[in-house]
Image (cartoon, rainbow, N blue to C red; front, side, top):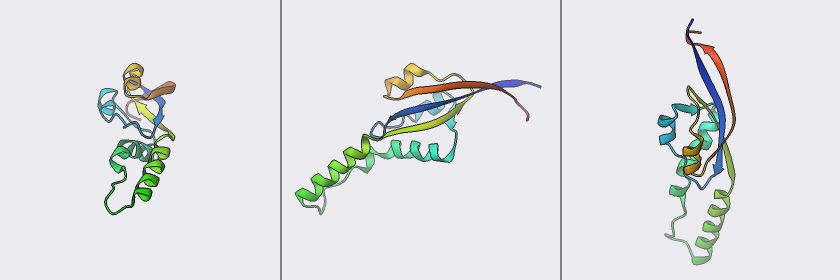
Length: 110
């Protein structure tokens, strides 16, 4: 039976760094579990969720911005799977680090 290598690894960054969605195509990878998919979505949308000033007092707006920035400093980890080695340098160019790379051979038609 034909076998392929399946790579598993973890990428991490601050929530404020957009998730580099093109990496999914480039590395032929995907989120390993639903929690990782949720973290990926949160990282992708964090900047778009920046508080808007409309209807807020100066104090309310400043408080909302501080909370948003504090949330953006949170480190998130996303477990990934891929059919090829991750391009570590390309992930790093987007502000994401790659850790715990493992590979296993699996039957293509299990």
